[in-house]
Length: 258
Image (cartoon, rainbow, N blue to C red; front, side, top):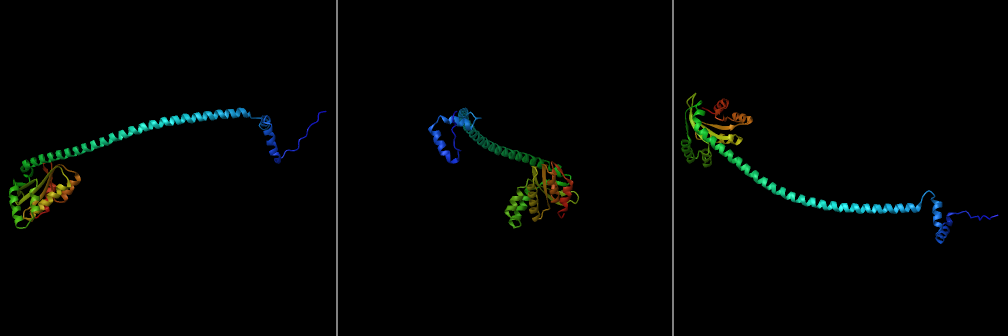
């Protein structure tokens, strides 16, 4: 009969003794592992873990390499962008210069148009104003003398004199209805703006200070609806292209004593 060796009940206090036994007999470790984890092949698990770690490290190295390549590409792109920005800056400078040239060209064209239109009005004044005035004539020279006399007597300032003499056309005649003398203070512009109205009104007012019956007149090829309405309300005669707006003429005459 084989004697069965009995082992005392194992407790937590015996853990150091167990560890000592395992350290003393390392060959028992595998048996202990199998006893503790029968469903796990620990050597294989550790091998797979090691392989997984190798694969992870390789993936990290690959990713690092890709990041390096990406950074290189990004740096190249940034360099290209900097060059593009430089080119854009140069292009913007060229565009700014071009805009300045275009603006100057627009102003020059507008000036040429205005000058041409002004000459046309001067040449055609008899036909334009003949419906309302008789004995129409250019009165620039005559009015210039009156202005100089008025300046000498202190009725007007030198600035007033200079202002009126800069008028595009001073056209005089007699009103057909009552034969009274009148002076038309005309500002001409291809495209009429508010300052054209202001100049005509101011210059007509100066002439009234020296005793002349003067009407502000603004002639233009292009009028906005709002500006036309504003001109009539302010007593300015509206000449659209080469046609007087009758309502503006009647309203302007009603604003002065004749």
